[in-house]
Image 1 (spheres, rainbow, N blue to C red):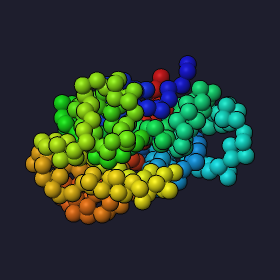
Image 2: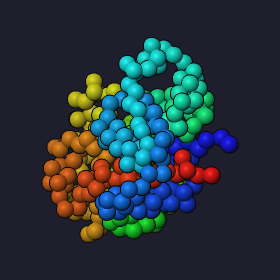
Image 3: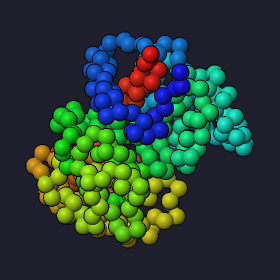
Image 4: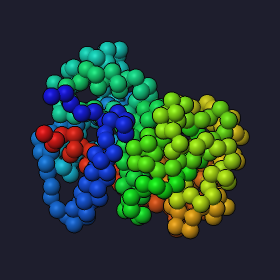
Length: 302
């Protein structure tokens, strides 16, 4: 049987996504209660990193250990990929020795090619196009605080990057309304917008986007690999900082999320980031639990 991969939220059905979210909540409770649960004993996760990380590495490595397995960190310096070995060859060899692979890289095509030639499940730990694991954690966090997100309104403010693209897929799969407030020329992927239909609205005015919304989300203005654009982006995105004024336009019980790392005073004010409606620390911790649920799902399904 061909392995199930998780390169995008669209690789799972809406029911499967909700199953993983609720399983993550259960696994979190078990972990906090000190319960030992090791369904992945003797399983090995290979983690290929071409982009640096704090939350992705720690959450996958800790999660695999807590589930009884082992995680192996591989940077470009640690593999022949860094010396030009074809991705197809790496996929064939690596998947013959480990049980599952997680990749954090630049080009989405890289992970697609790896999955095509892998005999074990491949997980997208982040590409320039998508960040689906973060969305699992975000949706777990929302569910813990507010219940099912179906029918709610979410506002994403800032760059139409991999986080924004993943929120579009989430809106499509979990049936919520998404407003994307982005500067002209920094919109998310147009094909994803078309696929999501009337669930997604592109706006230029962040104030308009925040009125009566249930969740406000943002991300850094310059992602990894865009450092040379930092100064230019600071000028363009300055009107898109998530401030208390914007948060006050949202519904009274609205939440604020950020995938981290955050730059207080740039994409978000310190007042919002550290305020009572911010759930960023729950969101960060939930990377561990959501990914444990994903690992369990991919490795134990019949």
